[in-house]
Image (cartoon, rainbow, N blue to C red):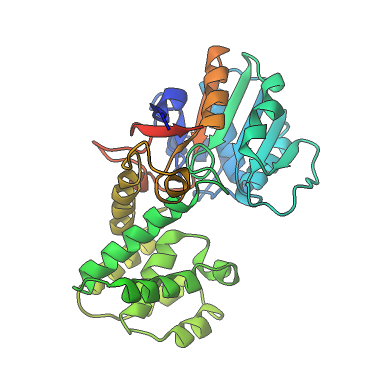
Length: 341
């Protein structure tokens, strides 16, 4: 199959914000500029109403718009942003797409729960004008379409944590050892532990490494996780060996209240994510591409191109920290990728 290729910045043009809520386009206000104006003390996450407030201020600085179209893939964080923008008084229409979705009944007239990426264009094209601002969630929407091509995004993250584990424990994981380690990782990355992990991969990753180092048993971890916060947990952990420096890194960032607790892990995540972009031959079977290589979601890319043709703006949002998304010389939004379909 012959693929068109492109990069995310073909539609975003640096109109992108990551977890820190600092736009890549530096002419727009960053979080430090906005927090005093908005009376905020801490950096919000996507699930917080304050996130929508900060995002809306950035969007208003980008262009004079009359309506927002929001494309996402999760019925939790993306839906929350859409609802919060609506409650702030914006004319917003959202499409949440996951081809593995079991229930597509939406409780809100301004949000469509969709189970086919091929349907997205028909749902939004008649709502687009030169006064529309299109907001697109990046992971599993703009790239790695959820339910079709999301596995490589997850695999890039596990590639990163396995690589880091091999380094600090000074051994190469064979298939069985890697499976054991990832089983531990996945047992921490569950809905039952969201109160502890805060849906933060930095926390999941450092806890997996700590348990694997035998500094604490999994059962003891579960007991503590049900009684104390992660911040209290990490403060009381003592380890030795190469992992000691990583635990200290996280402890220091907890004290500083940094939005990125585990930069070492996130830098490797960026490398592993880029490694899964446009690396397989074009004649690779689609099933293999969908499970191994991160692709640009063609339907979303086409909508973005159409919005630009109207003279409007396409804005990318991601809950990943900046360090997992770009560095001085590498970025996920300038990396050339295959576009499907």
